[in-house]
Image (cartoon, rainbow, N blue to C red; front, side, top):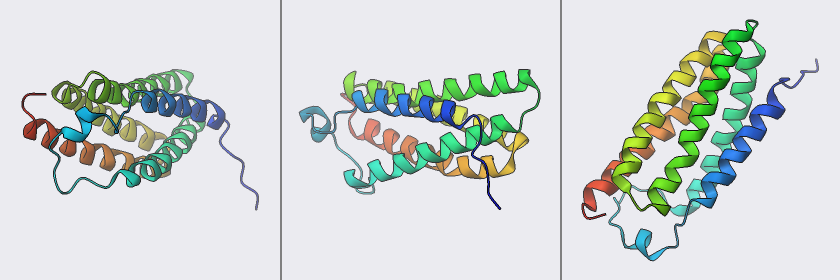
Length: 160
């Protein structure tokens, strides 16, 4: 049996790809500032972030496309698309606040909003397609972990 790809997948993939590019442009893990920050021992090695985000972005694209495909009401699709867009904007902007603006505390406030947005997006997706919500769950978990990591860095570096 052949399965069709979700019809919204090109749009969700393009939006997620744009988010990844914008976010990566705001990331500078080689800067003296970042390397000088006190970080917790439980921070994953740098090589873990690329594969983790690649996987999460793929899941986000597919899950959101599945949810959108299953929403028959155009108003519900627009509301979900707006929630998805808001989430992606928050996702990309964290890097700019943390790495470029060098404001771990501002980034912490922002990532708390990102986590709330991610939980909301997962809930909305689950109403349309429980599998989509399951696919978004790792993203919510990763953002929760990243929030704890951001909080630990902000706490260890009060002058930044």
